[in-house]
Image (cartoon, rainbow, N blue to C red; front, side):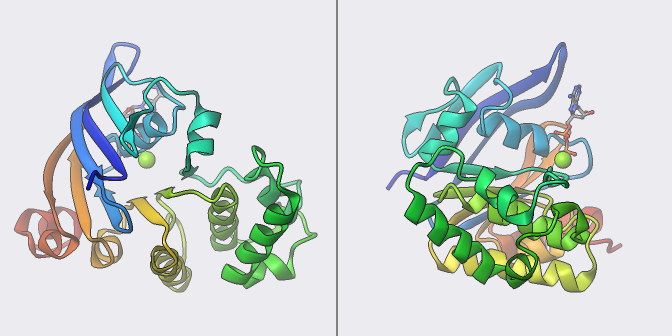
Length: 238
Ligand SMILES: Nc1ncnc2c1ncn2[C@@H]1O[C@H](COP(=O)(O)OP(=O)(O)O)[C@@H](O)[C@H]1O
Ligand SMILES: [Mg+2]
């Protein structure tokens, strides 16, 4: 069976500076795949290339076996690949409900959209309680839930989450991680970028370590948790 997402020798540059230097990895259907790596390693750049926000300079991106590296971003969403960006990018003056509806901007099936708003509200009850309030009134963790809820509104086959636990309290982080497990159980495949390597690797089937634009290590989440280099560099052990 082919992987849901296959990335082959992907290169992405900002002008003359190459941020992603020929990486290859796969995301298998039904799994959580994690990219870890220090700041500036190229993780966000990779996700932005996968969702069509940046054009790769070389390499292949295959989603369900078809090349998407020249497909415009909105069509990539329509194909089933959604991106919850680093820093969340919610619209603070719009209500929570309006923010969720933005995630369904390509859809016309009103009944299905309404169903999915309810689903996001069930997944994150705080969104239901605050539905008509401005999104800017939510705490950081709640805004992260909104960003995830919004990404889910396109009914993605693959959900990409860029540092969902950034800046959150340990309790909020646990909630986000538990939601990732719940989403996988309900059939959503996930590509996760995380600084919190311990939490991310613990729930990942597959994981890759990125270092200055390259993939330097890969394995199952459990293998990387046991790896000496990972333990020293990402888990704060000597
Ligand atoms: N808009 C940009 N213009 C120029 N360089 C950028 C831009 N965004 C990121 N970079 C550079 O690309 C590299 C990778 O950044 P990024 O993908 O954000 O890393 P990560 O998400 O792993 O922290 C870094 O060296 C960063 O400074
Ligand atoms: Mg980043």
